[in-house]
Picture 1 (cartoon, rainbow, N blue to C red):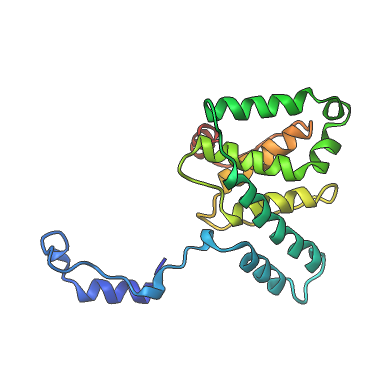
Picture 2: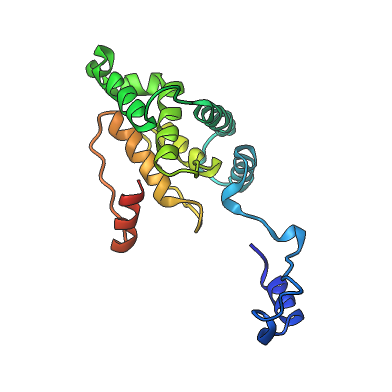
Length: 202
């Protein structure tokens, strides 16, 4: 992402009519211009949230936010280390999910089981999404959004996600988690075309 001023400088430096013809000189962006908000680290995201919550009421505690940052990093590391030694990855994931669904403790209280086994469930959900959408992997922003929804059990939560930070993925991950908890999940989108595209992607 570059600022408007940086964009103007680049446009003025290179004659428009030569953009496609002049191969000798590439358009060069300033080294500090790349600031992809969706690639921020979990700790940076949480520090920003803590800073933005100053002097506000009804906020999430700093301890909870710091715990979420640690969990996000840990779950991501576990998911990235998952490998399949034999067979198809999707078949292995389906088998893992089916094994969970068949457990007596899961059948007795699915929500309690899932919430008490986050170290297994969250990496499995992240891994499943990454296998279905290779080579992409959920970003820290998306994992934190999921964990915020999970930690808000019984309180309700409204999250504001910036453009390009992966709302579709966040909704997909969150829906998968709450469905595993045994909840009926309803997703109400505002844009039909994006909803169809998102459903196919998730």
